[in-house]
Amino acid sequence: DTGVSQDPRHKITKRGQNVTFRCDPISEHNRLYWYRQTLGQGPEFLTYFQNEAQLEKSRLLSDRFSAERPKGSFSTLEIQRTEQGDSAMYLCASSLSSGPYNEQFFGPGTRLTVL
Amino acid sequence: QKEVEQDPGPLSVPEGAIVSLNCTYSNSAFQYFMWYRQYSRKGPELLMYTYSSGNKEDGRFTAQVDKSSKYISLFIRDSQPSDSATYLCAMRDGNNRLAFGKGNQVVVIP
Image (cartoon, rainbow over all chains, first blue to last red):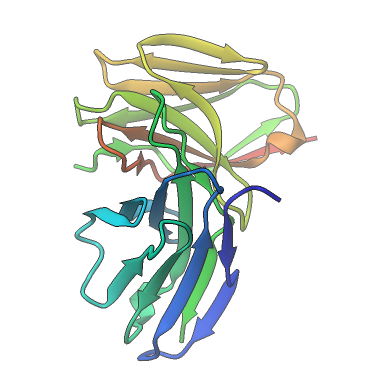
């Protein structure tokens, strides 16, 4: 499968715990994006990387959230001291930086439930 | 006012009917307009991509963009039960983040 993959697909955690999600983009894609989607809403942009550089962060990305893409390949999103409001689907997408459209391909998401 | 408005009401149609979906937006900097389809518990998949005002057809799907009215539409002709999904409009300016609407859940009844 050459699409975007995310791990784990589901995560249940207790409030206050830390969680980390992984995203593996399409291999030749140099851009990687994180979005969050809550029930009944469209995805909301969190952050994006070009290669290993984090170029943009949304104000939704509080200090408890940190994202990395250390070698310009896979990325991790960590949430520290989780809160019930963090419960959502976390979506990763990747794209090329060249071309007029830079189509973003999405992974299946990681569904987080904070109890 | 949100950047992208999409009336999130569910839509049920009989098989073979035309499905009509639309979004409005407020950010004049948006240049690229997309429709994504999302099946339950899956990530969004790109359905249609347009840049300029006008119509774009792809099989049973037609996307319309009216930049002067800041209004985009998606039409699905001869709808099939397999078209049952949530449809999300999305837009971006010259940067890279996508701004999405809330989505419309469409159910096509056999």
